[in-house]
Each structure stands twice: as C-alpha cells, then as structure tokens.
Image (cartoon, rainbow, N blue to C red; front, top):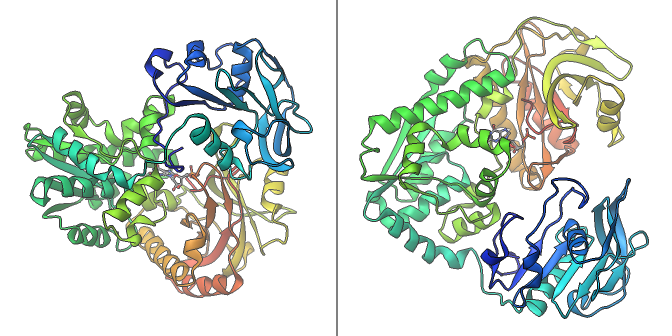
Amino acid sequence: MRELGVSSEVRSSDTAASELAGRRGLIISGGPSSVYEAGSPQIDPGILSQPETAVLGICYGQQLMAHLLGGSVRHGDRGEYGLAHLQIAQADTILKGIGSGEQVWMSHRDLVDAVPPGFEILGSTETCPIASMADPVRRLYAVQFHPEVVHTTRGREILSNFLFDVCGCVKDWSPTNQIEKLEEEIRTVAAGRRVFFFASGGVDSTVAYTLCLQALGAANVQGIYVDTGLMRQGETDFVRQVFADLGAKTFLVEDAGDQFLEALRGATDPEKKRHIIGEQFVAVQERILRSGEFLDGQWILGQGTIYPDTIESGGTAKAEVIKTHHNRVAGIQKLIDTNRIIEPLSGFYKDEVREVGRKLGLPDALLERHPFPGPGLAIRCLCTDSEAFPQRLDEGWLVPVRSVGVQGDARSYRPILAVEAVPQSETFATDTINRLAGINRVIALLGSHTQIQEMRVPAAMLDAPRLERLRIADEIVRRLSIESGFEQKIWQFPVVLIPFGTTDRPDSIVLRPVDSVDGMTASSVKIDPALAKRLCRELLAVQGVCAVFHDLTHKPPGTIEWE
Ligand code: XMP
C-alpha cells in the first residue's frame, strides 16, 4: 500500500472494529491456518459491516470472510501451491483492466466453495472455482491468490484498483515527505534533552541518528560505537568517517576488542559463542550507560528500531529473545520505562529507511551495504575442539566441520559434504542433502594447494590470528566482488573460515554469495569462472589458507550464515 503511495499500518487480527472505524480500507491478510482449526486467527465481524470502510480479504482473508458471512469453505488436504491462470467472470471493481489468462500465485490448502449471500464470483482458475469474489454493495472484496507477490503479474493493479477505485484513497504518502514531521516529533519527544545512540554503522541506526542530528543540532546528539574486534577490515574507520561527514561533533568509539576476545577464549560451540557475544554487548552498554551521565535525566536514548522490529516485538516468543539481546539491557529498560527513548523510524520498512537516508544525503556506500550480522566475524570463524579427518563417500567427502541448517522448524548443526568440482546440476546440493541424512550443506572446491584427501580438520579456536586471516580474506572477496560488479547482483556475500587444511595451511575459505529478498529464504549464486579464478589466486596467497570452496546450498536447507 505504501509503495503505491497510500499510508497504511499493520494491526493485529484481533483489533476491535471500533478501533478501526473511519479507515478507508482494511485488508485481511493471508496465513497458513484453516478457519476450522481451533485457535486460528479471527477478526471482529463488525469490521465487515462498516459502510465507510471497504475490505479486501487475501487468501485466508477470503476464506475467513466467506466463513463469517454464511458462505462455505472446503477443507483441502493437499492444497495448491504455485502458478495458476485467472479466468475473469466480472472485470469491473478490483479486477478492472485485467484480462483472462493472467498469471496468479496460489498458496492455499482450503478453498471457498460457496460464496456468501450477496456475493458474486469475480474470477476462477482451473483448480479454484472461486479465486475472487465480491459484494460491491457492502464493499467487500476477496481474492484467493496473492496479489502482493511478484509472481502475480498484474497484482499491483488489483491492489491499486482496490485502493483508488474502491476505497477512494489518494496517492499522498511517501517516506521522504514524512521527514519534516519526524523531525518535529523528535523535538517534541526530546523536549530540550540530548539524545545518545549506540551506533552500529548499519543503515537503520545511522539514518535514525542523522534525523536526530538534523532535528536537534550536532551539539545535542552523541553517537557511541562499540568496536567488538569482530568487525570487518576498515569498519571502524568507515563508521568514524561516515559520522564525521554527517557533521557529528561528539562521536565516541569504545574499544572493546580485548574484552570480547577474552570472553570468547576457548569457546568452540557456535551457540555458546553467540551467547557470550550477546552478554558482552550487554555488559559494554551497561558500563557506558553507568559511566557517563546518561542516566541523569538530561539524556534520552535514540534507537534505529524499524517497523518489522516493532511488529515482531508484539508477536512471537522468538522476538522476545531477540529483543532481550539487542535493546532490553537493564539500563535501557529503565529508560524505556521512564519514556526516555526515541525511535524515529519505528514506523518504517527497510526500503523506506533507505529512501529517507538518501534524501538526508547519506552516501550509497552506506545505504546499499549488504546486511552484516551483529555478532560479526565470530560466527563466520568456525572452531573445533579436536582433530578429525574427512571421510570418502560416493558423493564426495564428508568433512567433520559442523555448520547450521534449517530443516523443518529447528536449527541443526551437521557436517558438510565437499565435492571436488562445481556440479552441472543446479539442484545437486538440495537433492544430495535430501538423500543423505546427516548433512545440511554442500560445498564445491574452487582451488587449493592440496587435494582434499590430504586435508584434515585441526583443533581450532577463535583467536586473533584466525580472525585476522578471515578479515584479510573477507577484504579480498569484497574488493574483487565490488570491482567485478558481482556485489551489486547479490544480496549478501558471507566469507567463512573453516578449520580444514594442512599443518602449514590449517584453514580453508568458503564463499557464500546468496540472492534473497528478506533473508528468510535464499539461493546460492553461481560465481563466474573468471571471478572465481581471481578470487582463488588472491585467497590462496593468504598465509594459512589451504583451499577455497563455494557453498552451493540454498536456504532452506542451509542457513545463510554458517553458525
Ligand atoms: P541466517 O543465517 O539465519 O541469516 O540464514 C539470515 C540473515 O540474518 C543475518 N543474521 C544476523 N544478523 N544478528 C544479526 O544482526 C545475528 O545474530 C544474525 N544471524 C544471522 C544474516 O547475516 C542474514 O542476513
């Protein structure tokens, strides 16, 4: 809706109709439930009878609408997932301008098999007789397919028809025309107090910081950057320069590298490493909060929280865990409890934050950065307690380095399969992982000093020399990836150091370029042979590096990061 220029908000499905009164339009979203399941999401039926508010149900939203208004929903056991072609029965209202035969994307188990009284069928597909329905008198509309995904070719037009023709909205919203209002709000919330930020150098916190800087002036905004020693090469200098260019007067770098490394000494278990890093972040933030005068009432805390974080924090149990780690330190909780916190971007999505940042004059080098995980290089530097050897299988080599994957609901750590050359088949990794129980990743050798059968997995710790090795390799990959134009084509490019090699060269590098939209799913991206060759040449010249591999695994079954 916002991309189409109309202001919109996400609300929980149990919001009371009275709270939604006066809206021009409501959309009831899709979801995996069946209306017949106990505990499936419900709505206040009152929202379907507010004359000033048109309603669009999508997927589960259509089924719920049919169910509540006297239509019928058939329980499907297999469902329909993928592409279908829409046959139009009624081309006016939301399907205006859409011809028969357009591609739509379906993902559902149950089906509406009788429309409620007053409704008519707008469209169907071969397997779904009621793919769209409406009661124009009551201004209720619904589609079984998903107009919001790109695979529904004309989906945007269907949403536009609903917004502009049915709801009578006007295109008057853009993230950048909110800037003045945001700055006004910042001044109101700050009310004469100063704002401090824990800046990460990431897009969200930098844009939030810049808004505050513009709203309150540089003298009233303090940025603090915690250098964990787990960052990429040049990161601290990059962040320092970005803040200097913004006109920051008070920007502090807290050097906590030794503290993090000391706490991580001897830890090889991936989840333990993550836990330690989380704890150290908390400890450093608490120390800074207590050491400064930040709790004295003259300061409020700024955070780069964005809309998905805001939505999630009211949602799943997992979101709670993430919150505790990131911004619910006791000292910060105290600020929250006493309304001393400001989150200017809490109503914006990532792409909108980028637009705001661009308008504020932030450089593309910052705004278009690939995502980088909070725990930094620590989760890309794999460790092992004791020596082990690869084992020959028909498919390749089973390497006893454990990396994380997502199969089913749970994260699992399993060994990897290494093959000696990049296979022709693009489905090789997925097919092999499905067939061989016990692995969740497939990597292909791109270049090495030694054959795989001569390599072994040594005991390896998270220590300064290995981190430095990874930092050098990561810098090489980033430089060549940017120079070749590869960087712009992919979503993220983790570089992973695994303990696999020889006595002189105990580690190997795994290249993990992926394409993704939101990081929830991802596909492994091919590396052009010329680029692969250049990467290998430079990486194999790094002290201690024995081989270079390419991770062929999609997500699922393998996560983007290795830990
Ligand atoms: P996975 O590995 O779960 O990663 O497929 C999905 C996306 O999330 C990033 N990621 C993290 N980001 N803290 C972060 O700030 C973390 O602990 C973390 N773990 C994974 C990952 O880089 C990818 O973009």
